[in-house]
Image (cartoon, rainbow, N blue to C red; front, top):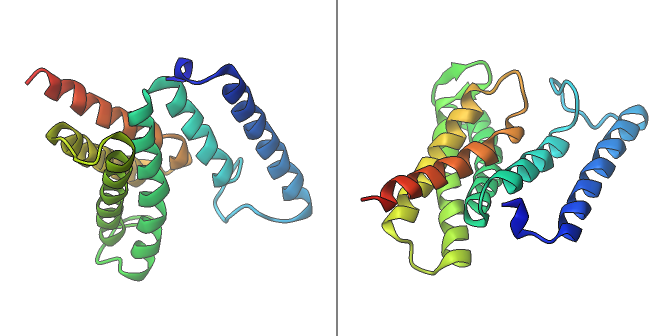
Length: 170
């Protein structure tokens, strides 16, 4: 959670976000960096806003999982979905991209959890990783009006935390 981080780091991250936002605004005037369909700010800015929201709401392990689910799953869904769509589901979303999101997000999250929180995945971590990958894919699939980068780290990390909490009682 945010209280786990030193105040200097939090202030630095907020300053970084503000600079990134204003740089995006300034660059939009000089150089078009917005992708077609991006309405208000670049996806690069919403990426960091989503991570900051996750940092404020979730413990470190859940933030790490949510972050990597977004960082790996989202671009892999786009790449695979464009090349191997299998079947179009809605708008720009395909079955191939959704399956790629789940697979690569789970693999990335497993690597981060194993590397950062113990070399052997416990069953609760494995179940949480699968829940996080599925939650991230669902958010990516349904989020059309807002940038999914705002929500994927929060919902994926939250799903990881929720499964860990639910399985702790078992």
